[in-house]
Image (cartoon, rainbow, N blue to C red; front, side, top):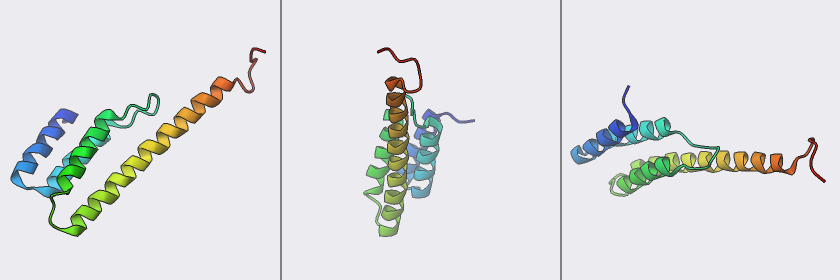
Length: 104
């Protein structure tokens, strides 16, 4: 099973070859392997890979290709935002001490 670093390397090699589909498949797989840390909200690694994907897509000639990458990246950002917010809200509600023997 390949590591995140290996998928990033494969994506970079695919970029040099102009293998557009391979670039995005490798980046997508690397992002999925990293996952999203909803406990701490640290999505730096996944966001950096997503940024690299979007920057690469800016040079694609076909509008349909650029649009597909834009839609994919927006979905990832939504998932990151949603899961971060949900977890932060849950943690903050727990701090309220509702339903527990909260200190007066």
